[in-house]
Length: 277
Image (cartoon, rainbow, N blue to C red):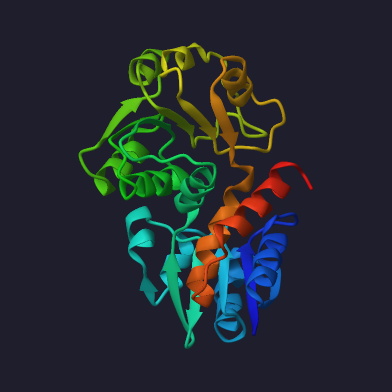
């Protein structure tokens, strides 16, 4: 069976997704044609109409994760809760929007044996990716999540979509130390540490985490970024989000084809990506 998928973007020229879906397709016995479609905003509506008739599904990256919802005929609860969609199923000419961002992070860590059930988590950031992570923490039986962010309107939006297990704080050193005390997991889903943005300058708050805590940095574009380096120096189990998109692909394949790649296949791809092979 042959499937046609794509990545909808504005200016994306390098992505792990073509490799990801080719790898998963072969593992499932499918022939996959995956292309990157870059489109300017004034051509978006016209391009999407063509995609309705030509594709079986597509992924969406910035700046269209929110805009795409205007074109969707139906929304999965994941997209409704997150307020954005990064995965679209094309079925009978209709667009059905999903959000798999946070799902990919949770799955990536699950493949490494980590579960969020019963955990106290510190989440920095409250934008689109952070909101998706928060939603997926909520459905994976997390105990409590402290959300720290610089922008109160973003934090309020996230808290309004979650339940009372989520508490919001201003992003300050004092609050970081307070929230990290005894926490089981620290997740950076903010722009801190991304290429082109400020990096962390004071990471002493990590010392307040539980000794066996896990540190996860969604960002991976900056080699030698301060957070993963500090986590390693302090002896924490730590990961960056390099394989997150590949793990999102597990859920996307299930949405698009009805069949998910096996965990064994996913682990093999994650290892290849994390080791630059």
